[in-house]
Length: 222
Image (tube, rainbow, N blue to C red; front, side):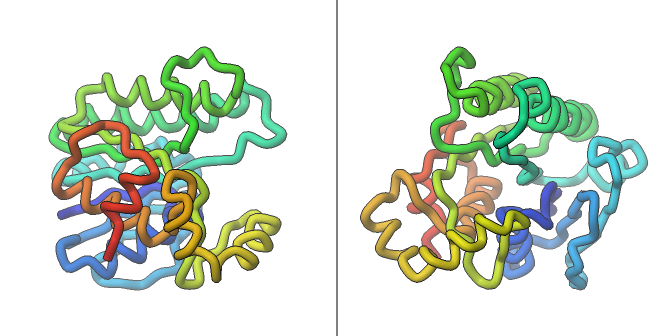
């Protein structure tokens, strides 16, 4: 399986990259981002673009990609709805529309979030925007598209967030990851379970286009 990865330097993207490198079923990873991954591996092609929606120079390599794992995302804290929409909806759809034109047979997996509002009319701003993004992706015409909705994601195996206070919280709760998942599989998962679940669905598909946290925990068991 040939994988296209967006957001490989983010917290979730780092985990997905690690899992892709471990997985013998993944033959190649094309990582597109604004900064290099810093990882050297024969399976990895680092594509550094200041504008990650600028895919025209890479169309040849993208024609035989099997799955796009889209892990780009920003926190809504401190942003207006217009700003958050631009960074969430506009960027995601700009990429997805190009990909579906280049390669209709690709599976597209989008990392959304628990509580996303599919009606697009709720009171929570980020949930409305994520819902609008999911709904648009599902109508584009990919071979398959899946919306992953993890709750809290605890990073493991040395992965760190670029947000300092997130790291402080994760350091405290990391030792409790396994019992937290057992007690609250609807709300908590780990970075490696999420990454493994994404690869399982990319490879085998899933019965629903919406993949919630309990599904992620079940699919991502080693």
